[in-house]
Image (cartoon, rainbow, N blue to C red; front, side, top):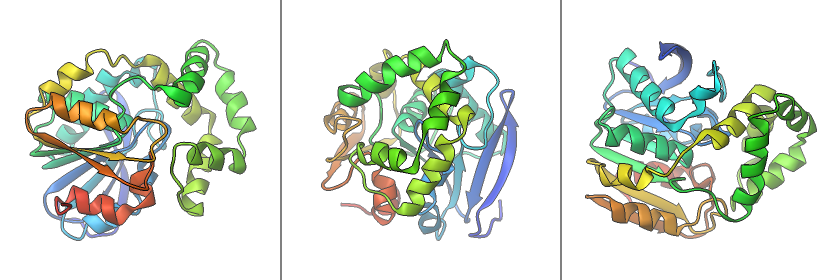
Length: 276
């Protein structure tokens, strides 16, 4: 594809869904996948930096951002992994590097382990490979399971959302992002369908086979952990890297769960492979 550095958003039909995709730049393809409750917006400052030398593709997961969903089955890890691979096939792309944040890293691990995607490099930012513990697990797990059986709850939660509440929720992940970033998340959290999809995703996932998926990863893998992450324990990166054949873990001081939004220049540097 011959694309300029201007982001081009469009939809791709694959696996019964219309997936929202943003593209930028030219060169070898880097695929970016966001985490639960986010969207392609989370890569907004990383994409232009990478697009100086690569073709960047970022995708909204089912029910998130501008990608719609059809049923609760769309939120299962396996369906999302199959879907990402189907989108790449529909676009006639074979990413050289795949990058996932949080749940996005787990989805890509599944897709790579089953050779649905065959990148040379795999990068995880605060990958959510294991069930949430601490405050995140105690808060989200019961709400997510309740929402799976109550279609009104997401509307109630989105109606209650305030900018201050969203800002505190983001800050409680250990990250301090820009006011623009808070506004973008706030706009998402005001959408009942987006909230329902995020909760449905949490309620639908089975991570019991994740260690086996990681053991089957063939690309070079880098597991990046923000030392201030309060959602995913930083040592999860070490555990994940230990399962892989060719992997390392990197711990970054002073950054939390949304580290790629806090320091997009560092995230881009890591993705391009220049971080030492």
